[in-house]
Image (cartoon, rainbow, N blue to C red):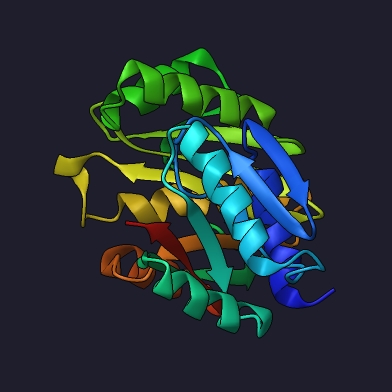
Length: 248
């Protein structure tokens, strides 16, 4: 298995869709429109044998019936180059160019004197706080909960507090195949750029090591310069790029 497919498979399990369909090598993920990652057509195994335009029409019809904009997730794999050009001609626009980053794990994370809570699986207390700081509406919260409860493997959620016991940052770790996936990283607006993101990440990495993780990976949108800088400073390096094509 090539490296891109390896991390894409981990990504599917780390953020499972409500419904998954398989059509001639394509993986179709639908989740009531909540996040592009869980509502997209993925083509990592190539284009198969069915005529391409027949497959495109099928997928577009499926997404329209679900009231979701048809969305493809594409990587730099060679088989995606032709498809990308076809999608552009059909009116699909590039959205959220992103990168997957990785790093090995060690035992040197300094989390002494940090005020944090760790929750196994999806604890309602963590969910309440995360939904509050993300300003989720009821539908988004419900979809987030459905997806989060389907994540397999070892899953834990972190709340980081400051010296006044106020919540400043939250995040999630999910371990599969000894790989620690990082997701749901969020620092409250008035607590940004003062080191809480780095502290939160060190907590998640430290807990991941305790649970047996040997390496870590994450996804970050390319234009999120602050997050990219944070992860680079923490030792993450780019593995590959991906992007979405969304029907306009």
